[in-house]
Image (cartoon, rainbow, N blue to C red):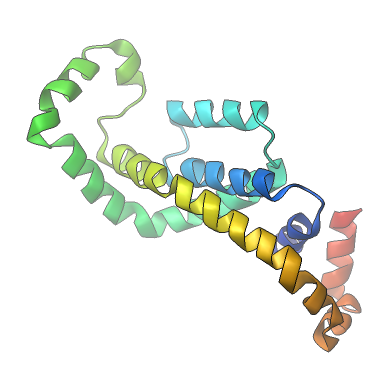
Length: 168
């Protein structure tokens, strides 16, 4: 746990552009909330490797969102069932399911469909909110936190030694 917290601080305090960090968090949202062995996650991983995304932020946030997914799964199942049983979409889903490619995506599972809908709906808000938080943390909070006595105490502790090892 200390290692994850130290890694988060390392990422936030790094010179990495806030857009790269927030994009890593947003892509991690999609991978973390949806079932891991899904075809769309391969596409997301491909995009993460092609686009300039901070991989540390992506993997750290994937772990966080994977844990969060267990709390969201009941809602995701309800959303997926609502989307898949919507009468106006029945012809669309039936036509897609006739193709072997779309069968391989497993879109017809309520958990996958619901979690994907939730993740895609939250993608832009997570991107914008995380960027806002990172920029404000760096501009306002980081310098102030460095001056606190508790920060000086932490720098003398074991926690900071773990942080220093990760930063090296």
